[in-house]
Image (cartoon, rainbow, N blue to C red):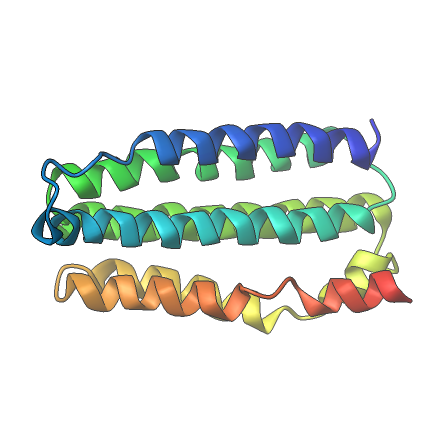
Length: 191
């Protein structure tokens, strides 16, 4: 299978995930500002989630552009990533329906953290297939940003039980750190 075919499949799944996320947004019950304010928390989490899905998709896109070969290990690693991403709409709904209780907020961190682990495993599967001297291996290097993000995701999980909004602030900070596509891969593409 070519990397382009894997990318096309992933694009389709990501489009479905985003569609489910937006369909889960409920219209405010009233027509006044208070109704909008009441809906603001779930909208904020939707925005954070949309950005996170976009970050995974964007970096995945860049990664596959420097991928030379795809094998069974890469396919399953990609499906693993998509599995965790597909749980994002579920956790958003859970947060909304429980009025942002600590457990769903912690679960959100687990889902994002597991998606980040799955992305890392996909990266490693591609490097195993293409070799340690591949363009992706050279671009990724030690990946301190990825490791720091993982640590923060899993630190936010227990923090959610102390301060729900502090945990959400951590999720926002991680998203902001990754908002720009991975420059390491972009510079490799330019070369």
